[in-house]
Image (cartoon, rainbow, N blue to C red; front, side, top):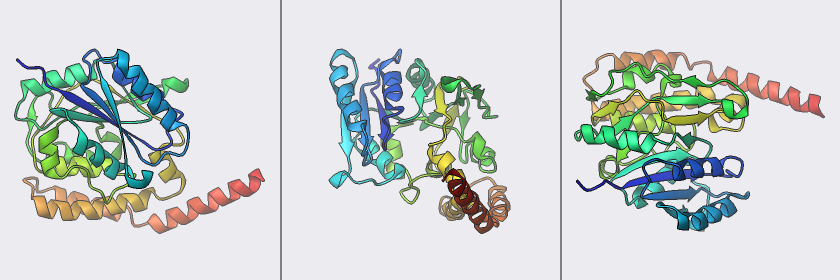
Length: 293
């Protein structure tokens, strides 16, 4: 049997603090990735130098490293950057890795094995670890609460993670050609909820399979996209934007789950205070800046 090729796509914007860890976690895989595609989304820090070192280091590795940039080296956001990587991935399978996260050494091996067991699945999904021990904190493993090693037809895990953002899985292994046909990531989401929008688009249309091994490290830190959005009080507005989109997407794709429309309405009702939350957070941040001065 011919070994399937695997592309790992890292998207990065000013990732000098953590990018090396992400790259090394790809090189450390027990099953070597065929290629590592790094999409530099307009970095202005030391990121390009880290990428150059990774390319040089790849000469001694089994993994080829390529770097992609948007025209004019512009910053185009997370979804457009993922789609640039997806469009150029050469592997039969593709997985994504944020520059501040990492993969455990057997992630590709375990996920490719699961994909072989289930040739009808378009994605293999596993739980992540909220990773704090790198800074002295305590880790926490996610529980997806879904049947394991069983094909889940549409809408997959969507009814489970729609009301609970904390249960959203990260970085599945994907069949590259099938995901391209679906349109890839939703480019209207440049930051928060871009992963949820993609997973919703995926799970409403194709079968997926869940494994129970924790293989992905989701780094928890104050400068992450999610942390910044909460700090600025934009989290409820971002959530509302996603849910409005989700209602339209559900109408286009259809679903055999009659509870989803009511679930979306209930979740939208919980976002009605987005203006008040944003105002309060801005006021708190202003007071903190004045106190610091």
